[in-house]
Figure (tube, each protein chain N blue to C red):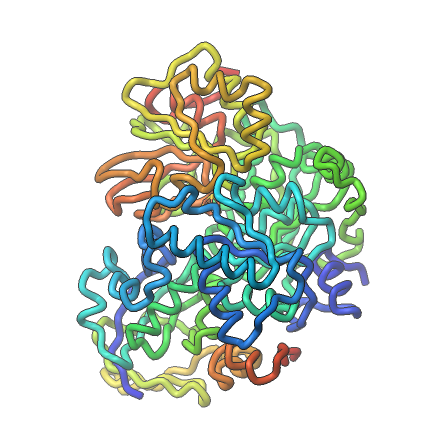
Length: 165
Length: 417
Ligand code: SF4
């Protein structure tokens, strides 16, 4: 699916994605999702369209373990997050919720660029530059979770973890 | 080939030798969540179709972030968790009991355990020689439901700290210095392991501060050997039976060794809005402070309150500055009352709030307004964490917090010690 790029810098924390002060909305996910990137990118939630992609720099998702950060990204229709690197808890949380987190050099991406992501082939087509960019392949364990539709579905299916690789 | 602590603990839980980079499914010894991540974890357990949890006596929900609850939505979450605990038989740690990481260190974490917590600072348990790591609600829910988690066996970065810590320099300064050096993602996906003669002599409070902040360098765990200090702590907690010695083999393979000479360290501050934006106290210049916050899972222990009281004894908090103290747990609170520490702090003009996360997460009990500056002992300072996105959080040790409270600006504690 094609999508538009929303470009962020380095060190975007879970507090940037969904601030701790909205703690009280965590059992009301649709309401919580409206506050995504509220300070970093005001109006994000109204302007984003399904299939858009978040593209960022180093250590995206650093900070708190709040899975709500990955969930509100997904709820806003973002198809994937692409970054130079991810914080580890956030990275797990993405796949657990069926949101692909892709690692590649993101320098050439600009806000609003149209791109298309081919997860299985490990490549991204960057339309403005007519370029094909390959990314660091997704680890098999993450692929399995994604294929199963997230970790909840995986455990529902096996009543166990079938993730030794 | 020798093994690192991380490899030893994970290997023991898989029942065979493990190597860095491998994905393993391991049994968990303890799993917990807090009131921000717990409701989702409990719902995930239900969604996966489980009516019970795998090991109720080792599954705990902590009501610590919103404690007591400042909003009805959060009171509802608390009640949901109380109901879930009742149905499944798992434990609830009530409002006022304290912060999850402190309470489990006092009561539950054993050297060699695999501990999973739906909170990033679960790594605090590494101070006791446990493979304790933070995850999201779904991973915690799986551990609650089936008693297992998948993990990538991490490479280990060994941190060797040597020499005597100078007066006024603490565990907090060691870890801030390290994070300033390697960066906020300098240990992502890795285990940090702390050794050296400084560490051998560092008390459990100092070790927990360091382990707590391992995640601020991106690490999965911040491990300490289980030794005489661990034994002493477990004995104090009435859990001597949980002690077992544990250390890496001398020929273990590390990805890297980082050396720190403790004798050259100064009180260190993390400046807004990144934990790795560190400066020594000499480099900090004049920073006026509106609020001083002493407490949190990083520095809410008795020793932390005691050092602040030592500095504040007979002095007053600056009229321009508010000082808030939240003990890490009820037992810390009680000890600080019994030995007079709390009285010294209150007499100096500080206010004490219930044991819990307090102001750390911007929810209540000290929310910062536009343009306000806070010097806090907590582990992180991201923009907007404690309230207004236009506020500024500096991080430092409890000693820095106390000196800062006196002067109303970030101050060097060494002149008071
Ligand atoms: S005190 Fe702060 S850092 Fe520690 S667990 Fe609570 S909110 Fe998190």
